[in-house]
Image (cartoon, one colour):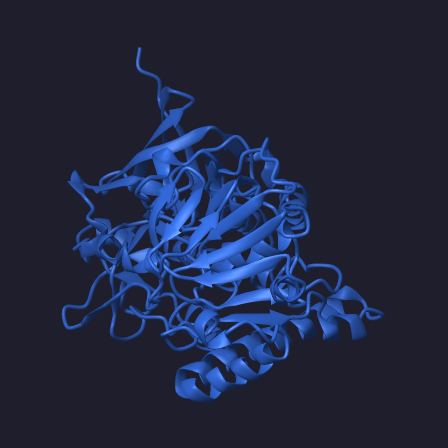
Length: 495
């Protein structure tokens, strides 16, 4: 006897920040709908549970990184990973979302059938094949591979007698006290690791092929501190909007007047670096600000460790590893007991789930993103990918709000399915406009953007508010499968 697969109205893939936020908003605004959250790992929290390396913290302020509808309490702007994880799990518990999460459920394949207006979802549950069906599939697993980081092969690494670790798989037994540590990388992870490890290690060297923009910002938000006597419901929106506008203004200034912003960054950095460190070599990137994501360090902790001599910077390329460390192309040798390869992420769109629509596999690179939350030709699919130039959660919140409105609209018109229909004259653009290595390596496997709205978002929160939060749902681009359509008066188009 063949059992009928379990059915839910909405199936969310991923129990990290995006998935928890999505489920909370559904519980709040659509309590009658059945919801399940599938998590491939054994714990919730996503990034904030996975990464265990020293000093892990947010690189966005917590007043925009927390949910709009659930304030972050206190004045800490850049919070540590355990505090963020506690916040997420507390929110999940408050909304009853923790009861919806099914762990060790890895989604492998999802097939859409237009006749029944359902997704059939194939799941690996601890090695056992399980099937579920749903009306709406919501991919909230981010865009990087949780299993495999980006780890380039270094010549001679097998000859190295020390220990090589990647931050994404930090070993619990690593003791680096008094050790010579080399951190390879120049991004957010590297600038976090170096000041976190330096007080305990013998010495930490940050080895980078090329510099990134590194800026200091206060670990505690001055405005939040000044308003702490006010009720949170009053102070939180003020502090949140102040952070949104400052970040947006800085981004816009960097795009319009890059040379002026470069000089501003230089002046701020000059006062914090030791006199004997060549800032032009180690902190002057070859690209403009926000061509890649900027790195923020709380209270200048990286610069402090450089000034006090517990850490140092080397800008060079690796020729090979040997038994005692790293040989550089300049001829210099770095002795190392431990090497940390903070070399970045590997993009994996939609958690690697294979999508099929009416028997035809979906090639992501042949689809176009609608409002950066749906795909052309793929019905009843939502995805959450946050901003690259601002807090991830600002965009995640917008996606959740949009889905709440979309489902309400579908209820009103009696629609079972919705799909964005690509306009033939829309020109293609890259899905992300960052020049970061992890983005460039994956662009050919990602969906496309268009050259105009609603197929293109401007990475501008104020603009996206108008389009995503307040724009019409029935905008002429979305096609709906209603009872009238099923009688043949109109058709839901999936091309």
